[in-house]
Image (tube, rainbow, N blue to C red; front, side):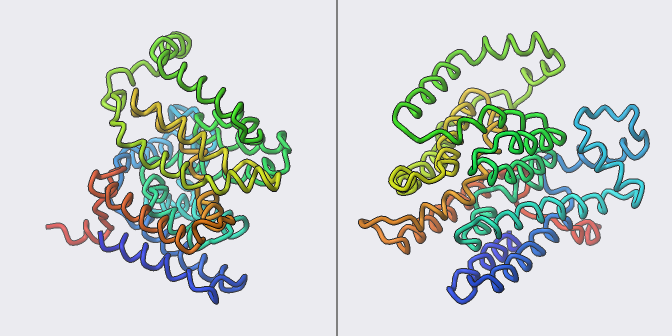
Length: 350
């Protein structure tokens, strides 16, 4: 656990105002990005899917474009390119995590109102842990982040282009196609009420709807017998619900200033989508894309004008709550990355 604690402590070092200047900001992001990149790349059997992706890499390296069994062309080509240069899974992890880290940290540096807080949340809210387990989906989510500037300006065509690129790494990114429209709608009571009613109807009609979907795409029927098809506790809704309550000042600011509703809406839709994990845990994957926008939404909410509670107090509450969630996630062994095992673990093994 020590590497994670050191990483969290280092992320908070960017909080002092002098380090938030433009030149210092990018230096901070470079240092933290390097730390995250090296920690993720040097892991050994850390992450539930570590061996799965290792065998996939060797399979693609051996079979090339034919017979690899991958339907996502982006991930297939990435594996193939690395295997042609360095036929080693460790090299693939270095290239993969470099690409993901550059996408996420550059996005934070360009759009976050408080980059240090976004980096802290990236680690504590389990996005970093996810990147060491769900490789394809983590990279797809990192690509989806770059639809944000297009969504802010309501340019749907390039935003959909970004989503389609992300779908080349994981097809679940296609859920963002309808959400590209929903995220740009004003956060009114009518909008949220209709969305909540629709989510409620889908929640109770989930199994018949999935039955229809599997009759069309039967290759996914094996999920019905796996442990991830089971429902999870409502305890897991406390985090997305807490995030939504926290961004209420941002909702008010959006309404008053008629500013872009994308960030506020992303937290709301993350809550609705994460509701479905109480029916089938695997459906949590559908919420990953909008949930990552919280890396901007939560800092923006902490800094939003609010007479009753100063921003410093709200920032402190956010830090404390995120740390508590990190400790809970670590105790539950989220993504199989706790505790951390590095390559030196294998070297020291008898």
